[in-house]
Length: 455
Image 1 (cartoon, rainbow, N blue to C red):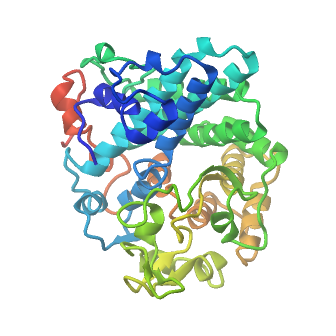
Image 2: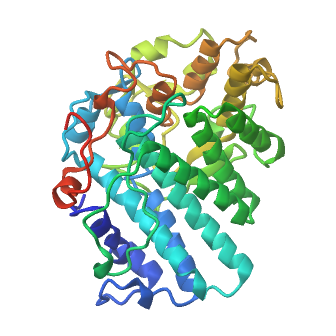
């Protein structure tokens, strides 16, 4: 983990780290001027690949954006047994402002945003109109989802009944191309402003993307954003569109298949992992922390740092396959209970699954008293039937419980508890201790950034 002075200076890593040098084909002696690299369509497309590369790192969807929201809401859910102090402090809500995982997630998310902005700023070199539209759509998608992830972690939660004038995170739409562009006076936008920017980026991305898969990835995130905002009609309609019209569908004969099968029919948006390129096999990556078993040669797979809490395990209904098939007894570095979702270092990471859309549609239809696409009972019982359970007459609590069981350890718990205003252990949903600090290096260098309460 590297140290950076501030978010804008940190953006310059997109022009200096070795993996992106290869993609951007920048002279090792370059003077931090992106203009020398993005002169052709191929240059711009390679830069876009660099932006997606950031998403796959352990700083973002390769680990932290999936792992940390569950670790942060670990009470009666996830038990941390590892030696990493940064994660232990997140689990115990004793975070300090120089926490390295808080810092690296912030830095890399803004680096991905800046790469997207660099791509957008270079679109004039792309001659073909369709190619230009697709490249811009993908860049807007990255910028939108990164601002969304940042505001959910580093700001108080969006309140559907409030003004949301609390401080969010800086909205960055201008590319940092040279050292002369760096400024130390970037302030935080409000939570409302950030969510509006996220919506705008994702909606614009949908109109510009030509691939069905790309369009539905943006739609899946937009449905998630709408749900977080309590915009139930919009979330319901977006989820219904995805369920009804997209090529994605539930795998009815296997709960494990979406996590073992690359690009499965359930995986609307996946982070690719393989033996040559992955988030980590020893000190980073979801399987690194979650797995605990012996491989064919008797070696331990995983550090077994993150265990399924027994209270959560015992909360499953008898016969629920999500308990019996997706949670296993550890035989590797530690014994105990472990989720089978993050089992191999080289499996793709499904960030958005069609399963989530059934849950969104069910919850929103129930809250609104509507039956768009299907009844809440039909959607919930479709998922319950796959899990080997009998039909129920759903209430809101039943729907939320099904959501928790279906999406466990996929990074939803913290955000779901905040949006539904449920306490996490002894902490109220809007407790400042459930909000990350702005990394101290940002505060020290950029006096326009205000720190979150309690840090």
